[in-house]
Figure 1 (cartoon, one colour):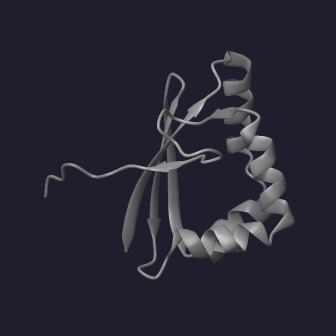
Figure 2 (cartoon, one colour; figure 1 turned 135 degrees about the horizontal axis):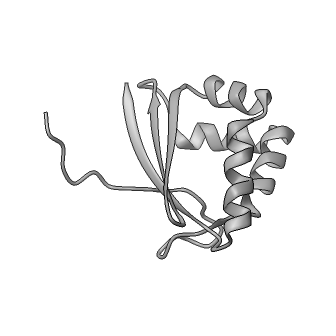
Length: 110
C-alpha cells in the first residue's frame, strides 16, 4: 500500500469554502467510483484556514499518470474538477494549471 500527501489552497472566500465543504459531504457517486477504480483505497482531506491537505492510500500499482488519463476520459470527473476549481487556488510554487501538489515526506515516526 502506498501513501501520498498533497496540498492545495482555497480561494480566500468563506462562502466558497463552505460551499466546497458541502460538496465534499455529498460527493457524487460516480466520482467515488472513479477514485476507487483508479486503485485508491482511501482519501482524507483536512483543512486549516485556506490550506487543504489530502492523504491518499492506494494500491502498490497506483500511478498519478494513469489516474490522470482515466480522469481525462471521464466527462463526470472533468465536470467535478471544473466545479471544484471555482473554489480552489494553486499553492505557491505550483506549475501553471496544477491543482493538488504532491508533498515530500521529511519525517516518519515508527
